[in-house]
Length: 180
Image (cartoon, rainbow, N blue to C red; front, side, top):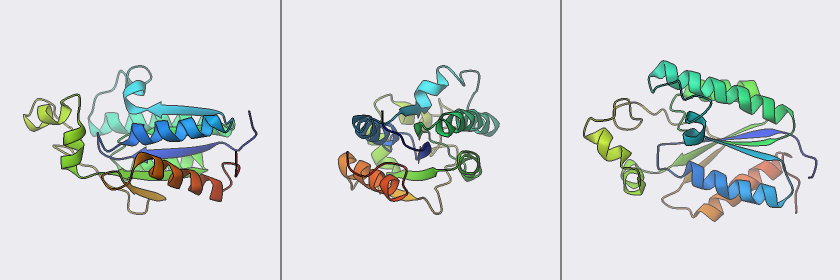
């Protein structure tokens, strides 16, 4: 393992935008460099840490509050944290930035129709049919970042190129050693 500061890369965007795919690509690169990395993903976290929460605004906020706490603990112990969450509300993303420090917000952006086309679980179809209430982007709001550190349009940019852009930002900020 190489020595490096802890940091948090927060991937936000609609379901199906490519947050997990991008986080996985970056995780593989950072691990190949010998870095300590933990990936916190919305689906995985909801199966354990936040399974008691629903999808009301209050529960979504509590979900991000808990994830922020875990990210803060990991990053202050020199772990690279890759957090991939819809995190639809700006206030909670701003909270995560304030609490964790060494924070990079990545807006993983794709038009709704692209996200729907990528939906292998059929969640959008259920939401459009009224079977899933409070589904972000359909019948619940998503507040896009106003000034993300990185804005990636996954309908225009391949995953590898997007991951390289995030990595370049991390190197530029001194979070990831150059080379390797």
